[in-house]
Image (cartoon, rainbow, N blue to C red; front, side):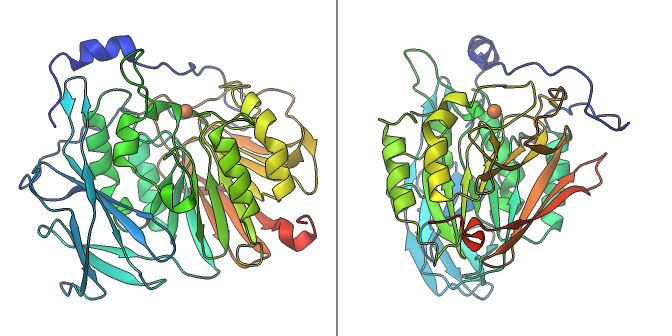
Length: 428
Ligand SMILES: [Fe+2]
């Protein structure tokens, strides 16, 4: 799992460059913080077979997928678990994978699905039959449920600050709309990212979708998303999808769809056909709330990445609108923005509320240049690092808040109560 000597030289040719960020901040006299450096995270496992980079994700009703990496290929893909510390009354076996990327060879990546699990319950678990004990809490089976939301996370000093703030809030499931590690071809940065997020991601399910920084494609050589798909396996099979790049899941009365901005989405694509089927299967009695996440925003008044979501929006907006999707959450733009309910370019009482939250703390810094005048559909916008919290209180009401880092203090800067579309007669 070591880094290659010539890796940096190779990466120079393939490194993907995002839009430069320049200009003044929007409004108020707050001095915008500068980007922080990528953290130096030495990663020295005690024994090569010890579990590393442990993270968990929802894997169908009452099940959880445990993912970890070891340097020892003979270490078994087994998880032992139970509701008391050290008392493992159940165990599951799973699958493993590894991959090579230029001069890099990954460790053994293990994926084990455990369950059926009780809802809202703490479980203690051990990976690979040895090493430290971890613990997780399963989400509730009914309202209320809380989500932590952060996009474009990266692994800088600001990332650390954001993760500390998320750790302070009570939440059940973490939602991440793309751009995780910012490894950008440097595979050892996937390992350091896995180590950085383990304290949070081993205790609550992290549900992610891919961003442009996950692609890591090389013309004629690598088609893309190799590391992402190997390391961050999501429940696509469980939701009838044929690709890890888009899937859905249900938790406590919420149906959540993770779309892929970087795979085909036109009306003839597999993703479109899957989305149509998935939306048809949504039962608003069982899941009154319907939420979609994708990396590239559709409604965004920042000059960064302006218009990049246009073609996906043209293909899919009417489908989501007809299905009564409540909220659309995106990342990509390194700033925060919340819209009113919109459809087809303007206010619509039965439209989607769009939230852009690509401000987790990546190394590229903030996108500070907003278009003026502010479009009528834009309610709140600000360039700051931070995270969001979505508390679904019951079948009719949810509370959304955005917390900016503000020089390392978590400061709640935007909040709104949201009525579910099903409760106001918008879902037919
Ligand atoms: Fe992005």
